[in-house]
Amino acid sequence: MCFKKKPKLATGTTIKRVDYIQILLGVGVEPISVKDPLDATITIASEEELRRIAPYLTRPADDYIAEIADCEDYAMWGAVKAAFEFHCSTVRVTLGESENGYHGYNIMVDTNSKVWILENNAGFPYAGTLMEIGEHGHIPKVVII
Image (tube, rainbow, N blue to C red):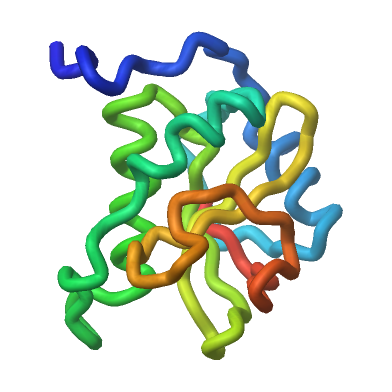
């Protein structure tokens, strides 16, 4: 196993996909979903655990390549890394506003049904830290789930 430095989350709490979507709809984030989703449940984590893994879900700014490996790719990478390395599927890709215009980043729901966002590009001074909706102009509009 490769979890020596970054162990999976201890919580292991799950939430039904439909309930997860309802929480996000409650803050104005619409789902982009497939007709027949594969996952009926989403594994969520406490705020404390999400804060602990958030720095690991960033990539160096030097990895950025416009139109090839840009903001939504950083967000996809963060969601995939959270799932594989931390066994946490609450970290999703969202698209919405930011201080720099339309942007891709991560969105997640914690065990208290609180919605958090995360910037994955280490070139931003606040990357790798949980933020509330609206911080640094980040207002998510849609989520891939």
